[in-house]
Image (cartoon, rainbow, N blue to C red; front, side, top):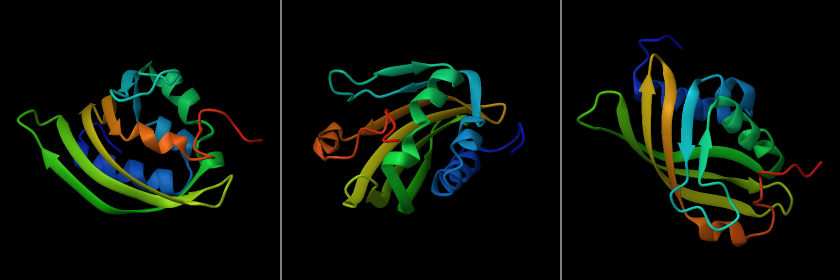
Length: 141
C-alpha cells in the first residue's frame, strides 16, 4: 500500500490480511503511534492500545482463537474528514477452541494518514466474550 492509499482501500486490504491470517502484515498497516480503542470494553479488557507494538501484542494470538471465514457485509461510509471512514461490518468464522460459529457485527471509526492506520475505534459487542474460546488476547498454545 502507498502513502496515497484511500482509507477505504486500506481497510479492505486489512480485511484480506486478517482472512489470510497475516497478522504481522496487518500490523504493518499501522503508524508507529497509532491507537486502537474499544469504547465498550468490559472490565479487565483493554480500553485503549497506544502504539503499533501494543496493537501487535494484542493481535498476535487472534488466529489461535478465531478462524475467520469472511466478511459478508461490509459498508464503508465517508465522513467530512477525507482521512476518516466509518465501517459497518459483519465477521463470520468459527471459534478455534470449541468449533462454535463466530458471527459478530462491528462498527469502526478509522482514520488513515500517509497510508497507515492512525486511529481505530472498534465498537463491538462485549457480551460476545461470554462464549468459550473468545479470549484471543492469550494464546491457547
